[in-house]
Image 1: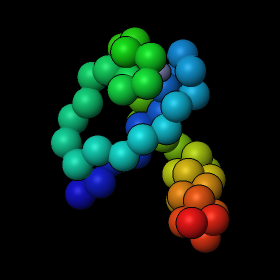
Image 2: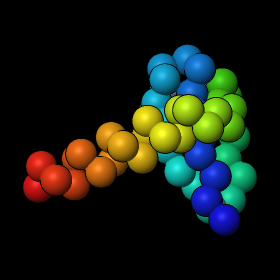
Image 3: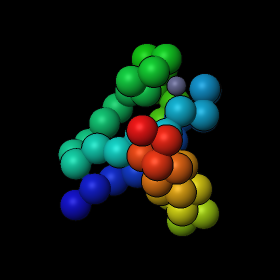
Image 4: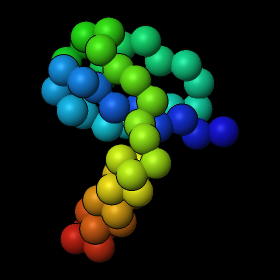
Length: 53
Ligand SMILES: [Zn+2]
């Protein structure tokens, strides 16, 4: 199952199928699970990015 994370340090959002301890963008251990609202935003942005290609 996909897990949605967000980094509190740089606000980077990403998806992983397993556990992650560090932000892949800034490398800090400031990540947490994204809230339902944040996940919805993330999915919307991903959809928009696909339409641009
Ligand atoms: Zn980060």
